[in-house]
Amino acid sequence: MRRLRRAARRESRAQASTYRFSAESIGAALAAGEDPASLAEFLTAISLTGLPQPLAYELERAAQRHGRLRVGTDATGRTQVTASEPTVLDTLAVDQALRPLGLIRDGDRLVSRSSVDAVFWMLSDARYPVAAVDADGRVRILDRARLTDSSPGTAAGADDASYAPLIERMRRAHSSDDADAAWLGRELEQAVKARAVIEVSVRLPDGTTRDFVLEATGLGGGRLRGRDRASDVERTLPVSSIVSARLT
Image (cartoon, rainbow, N blue to C red):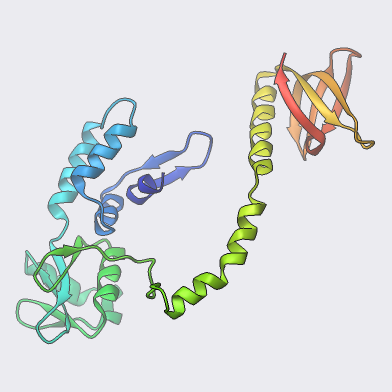
């Protein structure tokens, strides 16, 4: 799912999430290191109906646009921006959103005192079809998340070690109980929508459990409402006390 979120914008977070692809989202994925062919293969693999033709066309167009702007260093180590279409450089030079980069026209290129990473990511965030290149002109991938060197013996490595106890506590806190509670909540919601008859086991204050057969009628405020089939009365049960639920 992480790869899918890289190439599309999630529009809903229901049980069946909805994702929207656009030229900008696909371009951002390519800038982050995705390959058009492998991305198309991935989307085809996860789709039940194959890759939609409009999306295939958009991937093809994004691949053609990607890399029209290239960010690298010149012989003196300065950051430079080159373009397959020189007129694009004129657009960059007057783009007010890029003023912090201090881009200056120098022949058929733009130069900046900012780092390659800073120029690349600002152009990418501004939705320009940009690629980072090395000294030989080969495309390279920049890792936005890696701000410092985390190799052994460095300060970053020490910081990682200091976070270990916190990470361990977070992992323990995210226990299977959370997943069980989420599953139970979804089951109760579905039962209420269908007004289904369910059997719920409830933990009583004295530690014992009691089973109720209810026609689920409502769920809200942390409580389940339903008509008890055995006594023909309306019951309201705290969801936090429900141990399990199943359809009858």
